[in-house]
Amino acid sequence: MTVTVWVPRDAGALALGAEAIARELLSAARASGAAIRLRRNGSRGLYWLEPLVEVECAAGRIAYGPVTERDVPELLEKGLLRGDAHPLRLGNIEELPWLASQQRLTFARVGRIDPLDLDDYRAHGGYRGLLRALEIGSAATVVEVVDSGLRGRGGAAFPTGIKWQTVLKQPPGQRYITCNADEGDSGTFSDRMLMEGDPFSVIEGMTIAGIAVSATCGYIYLRIEYPHAFRIMSAAIAAARQAGYLGNDVCGSGHAFDIEIRLGAGAYICGEETSMLESIEGRRGEIRVRPPLPAEKGLFGAPTVVNNVVTLATVPVVLASGAAAYRDFGQARSRGTLPLQLAGNVRRGGLVERAFGLTVRELLYDYGGGSASGRPIRAAQIGGPLGAYLPASQFDTPLEYEALAAIGAMLGHGGVVVFDDTVDMLEMAKYAMEFCAHESCGKCTPCRIGSVRGAEALGNIARGINPEGNLVLVEELCDTMVQASLCGLGGMAPFPVQSALKHFSEDFRKRVPGS
Image (cartoon, rainbow, N blue to C red; front, side, top):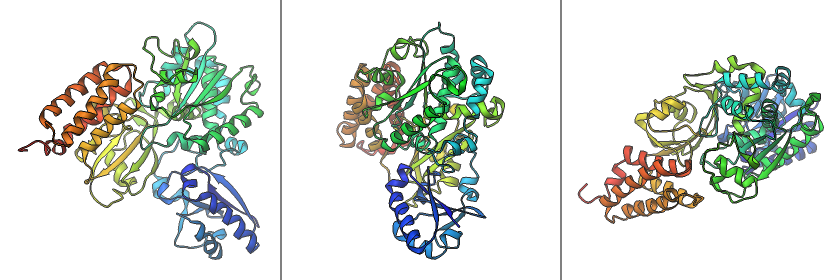
């Protein structure tokens, strides 16, 4: 009897030895005469248990982890292929409370399927959304996305359907779909997980967008630091094209749509939509002054949809299940689910997809298990390197757009980085300014100069050089950057600094004589 064994080829699992485990499984099984079928999947997102090996048994997919190459012979000897007991045995993966309590819609297939098996994708609901979009037509598809309440998951949280509607209303002519896969925020990995674990969902979402706004060409702008994602996305695009889901006649509908991948060169600023468009066009990644908006005049001067990976991978869910079903998740103006990514000093780092409304505390302790060091969690930065630092007194805030905005924070791409009580928040504030200075495109003075002067002033405070005067200077620089920067990089770089000053002032004041 041949037993199916799953070993992830997600970049995180590969970094921890998943490829060596796959080789050892095949070699040891062959030596023992056991018949196995080795299949590769994406990560389930339980990164503290990677590499996670799953075995298909009568009781379901039984998981073992974290597994090392050295563990394989003993696991096989102790009955791995039967799902037998072992210290590394976790039980049925679907029944683990950490995973079973989630509400996975966008990530429903990730970890369950072979990312490059198109039949596997279709068997788990893939391409139902596209077929429905082709059935109801472009205008109705846009209405469906509007009614779902889906907002951009890349940071700005702009309503996805309104953006599509704007493109659809433009005069007839060439239009483009662009997928911003330049995932550069600290503590974020949901885009990478999707591209490596369920690439056809991104392709399907882009194709639906193309049908909806009458665009025939799409570009995925992928960060060059994601070589595994590049290989998998390239192979998936080729497979989709061969199967008729891309090309001159999508699914025999008469609609044409195809996708190209463009690799970025590692500039954080190219995560900003207009800088990304400049880079795709072959120019230096530098922001454009708006208006006009990309939806009116974007890539190569044509109306352009700009969405990120998670947003586009969610679109097939909306079309397949209907706007009302998706809108039932979440609360207030934050509808649906959000993939949250836990990183930093946290015991159980990984991906948690839940409906909007989960509190920061529930995420950090119920899912994260507290800090990895065992010390109290002092701060959590939400929304990447430009996100605010939340103190423990704000951990009961719901993770949704308006609730976070009300306390001067943002949800961004859903990255959450955890710090225990040993962190120096002055150093973290200085890092935020240094990051902005390094990554600024240089187009506007507030960002280009303000970030450099801000980092210098914070460095002087740390060294005890005129701390009172430099604190005043930092506050003034932050106000100028927020009010006058041309894009979100300069406009949001002060958020971590201002939040650190507000909630952790003792780390700054202790440098002031007499404090």
